[in-house]
Length: 415
Ligand code: UGA
Picture 1: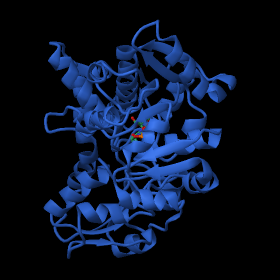
Picture 2: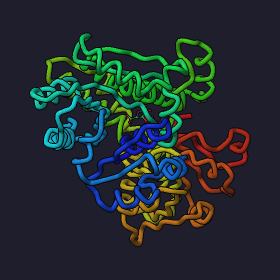
Picture 3: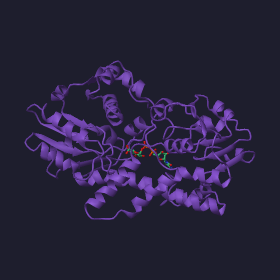
Picture 4: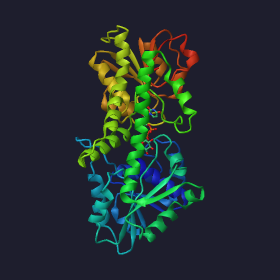
């Protein structure tokens, strides 16, 4: 019942299915059964409460005996070699294996897993009366329920064309999407697995691409956001995911791109573009410090407001947030930090506990007022309204509206 599992459970319950959510953390189970969300995500509380009669959360795998389709939604965190750690996946598979009854079941893999994983799961379950379906997830945090009900596509990978029964059941599960005209791609396991990685890698590439263009534009005195506007009229280019700034964070892009690079290496291929995507992204938040250096500012004992701790707005998730890189470097350079975020403070505290050089303030205006330099790292809408006075503002996400900039001591990170 992590991010993917909870959204899938609530979403399927809302459509009308009876759903059992298995979660080993008993505290989470207790909360969810009471209708208390365990993640922050728009709409989750309402839908969870509304569908409690069709939802049952439990720590016992026993319950899956009653289910026809089992979705595996466990995390695949990155190991120290940049590869996804599949321990949770295989342990879930073992637990499923130990709790199957005689009837036919489908096991649908929603976790992001490297090419070849669905085949390995089949190996483990070779004696069982199950079909394995690769059903990758394309949700975005912050709009996960919206994405669940209005997906751009549904991808279903099967062992082979003979799996008519599995196909028929999976299509029935997502019938309401098909009725709405959502495109379905029916393919094999490996292709489905690769679609997920290639999609995330492409989106990450767009971001690093535009950041590189932005860096060049800044030196040439050009506004990259104007450039993107001009580019985006070309239908082949579009305007999505071309917001230049301090780079991508979150639990997926960096992990998935690195996993794809690792897979390429494993098979003796190079993934040169993807390697650069990661390198550009790692350097991008450091552009802030280039600007500070260029202005001849010594950060020792300088008071700096860090506004925006989450990896994007409308979530409390700080995983791989650019703010982590920025705070670390500010602390190294001896700055005094006033950090603020509407939702991310509690999670960031776990990474950087408060100390004499780092204070968390809920009110962003207070953080601004106490500081000499203001860093804007996440595009929370309320940051636009702040009164910056004559402080140096370094905008990492194109937050301050253009007309407001003229009267400010303002620098965009790459515009
Ligand atoms: C991403 C994908 O967008 C989802 O399709 C995918 O399902 C998900 O990963 C996953 O694999 O689980 P998510 O990480 O929730 O979703 O967030 P995004 O909206 O993609 O943003 C990721 C990061 O890129 C954020 O830090 C955001 O600020 C940054 N970004 C995004 C940019 O810097 N520029 C842009 O133009 C867009």
